Image 1 (tube, helix red, strand yellow):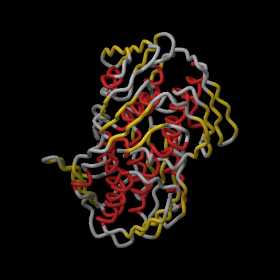
Image 2: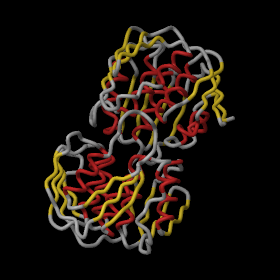
Image 3: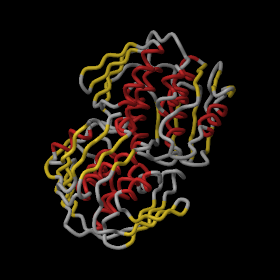
Image 4: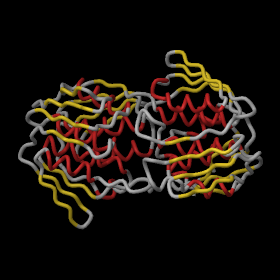
Length: 415
C-alpha cells in the first residue's frame, strides 16, 4: 500500500501552475463518442479517473493517442455501446457515457457506477431525463439499458441542480430532434466548458452556466480542438494548503472568478488574497479567525472543498460551524482529523470545529478523494510526522500532489 510520509511545520512558499480540471475533462472525453471525427483535447491532467475514461473509450473502439497533456480521440469506428463493468465500477463519471452513446447509437448498456462513497448519489435524474427524451430504460441486476429509435426534444425540470444530470442530458439532447429545455440546471463552470466544446463541434447549446439551458438538436458533429478550463478544486486545495501552513503562494493559470466563495472565506479568516487576471497571490498570517461554511451548488461554497477547508479550520481561533448541504456522508475525514488532535463534533450534516493550538502527526487513512486531500493538508500543518494511507483515492483527482507540494517547500514523500 502506498502512503505519504509528511513532516509538518514547513510553510508553503513559491509559485505553482494550475492544470486542467478533472471535472471538466471527463464529460468532454465522454462527449467525443458522439463525434465521427477526430477531437483534440488539451490540458488533460494525468489522473487515475482520466486513465480509466481513456481505457473505456478504447474498449468501445475509439482510437486514443496521448502526448503529454494533449489527447486525440477518433470515435468514428466505435463497435460497442456497452461500457465494460470492471471499468464502470472504478469511476462514477463513466455514467457520462449514457447520454452520448444513446444519442449516437440509440442504445447503451452500463452497470451502476462506482467512485467515492460520500453519500447517496442516485442517477434517477439522469434516467428520468432519458425517459423524457424518448428512451426506454430497463434496470435489472445492477445493470441499466437504454434504447431509443430517436430522441426528441422536450422540457425538463430537475428536482435538484445536479451537475452530472445536467451534463448527461445536454449531451443526449445535442443529437435529438427538436429543442430541449432544461430548467433548474446546474451552473458549474464545468458545464459551460462542456457546452463550449460541444458548440465547437457544431452543437447548438445556449444558456450553459445559467439555470435554464436550451439545446437545439443537430444531425451531425464534427471534430474540434478544445482546451479544458483550469481545475478550480485543485487551485482551491493549494490555496487552503498555503493558508493552513501560514505560507505564501503565487498561483498561475487559475480562473479567479470560479473561486469567489473560497476567496471570500479565506479573506474573512484573515488571509490576504490578491487577484490579477489569471494570477492569485496569497499570504497567510500567523493567526486566523474561525468562520462558518455552508456548502451549496455553484456559485456557493464547493462541497469538494469542504474537507480541505475543515482541515484549515482546526487551528483557527474560535469555533467554526461547517454545514454540508450537498452530500450527506461527507464527514468521514472527521475521525481521522481527530486522531491528529482536532476538536470536531458532528451532528448529522453539521460539524462544529473548535480551534486547537496545533495538530500532531499520526497515521491516518483517506477514505475518499477530497477527504484525502484534507488529511494531507492536516499533515502539513501538524507537529511531527504523519502517514497518510489510501493514496488511490487522492490520485483520482490530484496529479502528483506530492511533487507539487514538495516544489513549494513541503516535506512529503511517497512511500
